[in-house]
Image 1: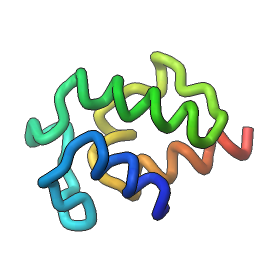
Image 2 (image 1 turned 90 degrees about the vertical axis):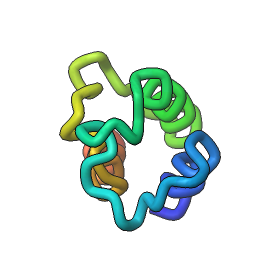
Image 3 (image 1 turned 45 degrees about the horizontal axis):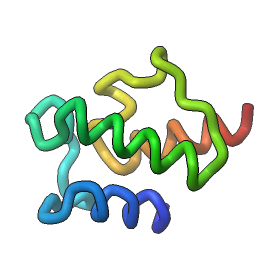
Image 4 (image 1 turned 180 degrees about the vertical axis):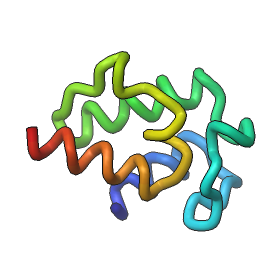
Length: 75
């Protein structure tokens, strides 16, 4: 999860990712942020995040993003 936190903080400094649980729903991450994060996650973890994976539930918290990455790594 440390790599994911580093990616998030690099793309969106100033957000307390450990505390926030509604990053997309509360408007802390916009669509451009999510696209940048997806790109970095894809590169860092060598995973394929599809359009079907890009839903608010998968990006509302660092835990949700971590679960998505782990699921895709297991596939």
